[in-house]
Image (cartoon, rainbow, N blue to C red):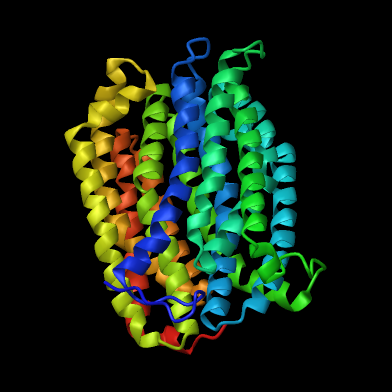
Length: 453
């Protein structure tokens, strides 16, 4: 279908336009997930520390909490930038971006303080195994220093996606991945004369890789003239009006994504009570969601940007047809991914270098997770559409509703009745259904049409 764009900042509703935005985003999301998998593959083969892969499940989800907070800020800023792009007001984009960076750095500083001062006490209360407890604390006190780089990187993504230039995301994510893979190999195992740092080597590698990704995308934006065009740092001082707008838009999303991943952290802490094998299996299931779900999340980010852009063009009647197109593409990918995972599960599970008993233990959870991916493929599109309309408070309330039921289910199944972990992973079914129903109802009601941002 023709994509014809009347203005380079404005989009049209077409499959070609959707894919043009979504494909670079999917690669940008995939590469950080590959970083997680690379860490886990190397740690799975690191025979000097057999607990490393299990601990990586807890630390990985913990860091995702703060990454999700940044993602919430990113989504709020992205919706605002896309709305200004749809309104053809490029002069406002740089002002919004500068304020977003200042807010992101403040949030990153708070995350570092929380991790150093409060998280160790929480882990000592909840984690039963002293070895896992200590390794997790040491790792996170290193890993958390990557947060400022991650947030600035995410906000630059918001700028590129919101202004219909997602193709430039690839350079930064590729640089980050290559740095992470190389440094993992060198620092975990101690090659080329570097010290063998084991589990903590993965933390140092990830921090350096995040800085690399941020720096490269900075060079690309500067080289392409994007910084100059939008005057990104022309007004870098604190602006109360724009900051209030960004916080009003992003704060519900930041809380929404934070409680979502905190509930996942809660799930992983309960899984730790089931033993190291259960924790290893659950860590790999997280990787499956990350890698195979990256295209779905890319379509979700595309939904947010395009819905906001189309509304900014005053074409509200095109929102529902746009959603139908994106859902067809998202579900098509999810079906292909689920078929591949269920036909060739051993091929994916074997790359983590574990014993045959691990594959046997993981199979029931794998079946459950692939079914959850199908539910996610359309539920997250509806939720992102709500975000794109600008009513992020509704998005937060929908998430809160889903999380309450999710946590109740997880506690009953994993802790109270102590059922096998694949029953615990069925919580994902409940979660995505609880997100879909109110999101669908809100969009169908038409109440979003009166929202102005």
